[in-house]
Image (tube, rainbow, N blue to C red):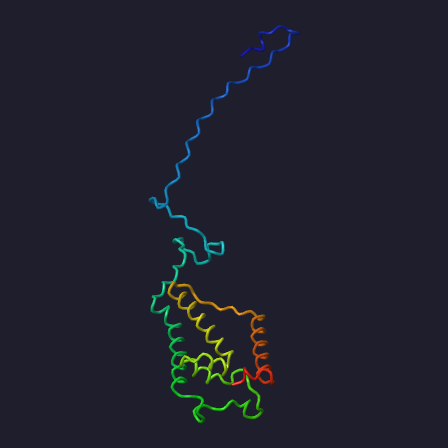
Amino acid sequence: MTDASSTRPGEPVPPAEPAPQEAPAPEAPEAAPKAPGAAGERPVTAPHAHGSWGPGWTGGPVTAPAPPPARSLARRLLAPAATLAGVAAAFAYVGTVDPNEPGHYPVCPLLRFTGIYCPGCGGLRSAHAFVHGDLPAALGANALAVIGYGLFGVLMVIWLNRAIRGVPMRLAVSPVLWWGIGAVLALFTLVRNLPFGSALAP
């Protein structure tokens, strides 16, 4: 350091030398992250599905709900097997009790009071002939019912196949399809009541 008293009058005073700076202390190394479950540490868990920990969260682990247990094959086949058994019992009864003989079944009220064949007229005679393997007689009694038997058989095959594989059976019928079914029934009723459609009458 220069002493200001040793300079001559009129000479500029040299600037004072800066004080030496101390070297910065080395930074302490960062602590390594602790593994989950280490002593004294609470495991960090995922938040709830709504994106928050929830008012009742106490710090415990949040686990996803367990999936429902798979149903056994017997339980999966219960509904389609019961439906098939009910339809088979109905066909067995109609096949045993002949609807061609009067007095066994009630008469169609529309046919009785108006003389008009409804879409279901002849359905019992068609089922009776179908059970006995007489397909021409079944078609002559009610051709639309025979088509319904085939559609039911296809539906049952699909249902049983899905039940065996554990796939739920869902039927989503659009309004367009419902309108189409209604139009077919109305057309069938109209044609079988006209002279040129007498082949469709029972």
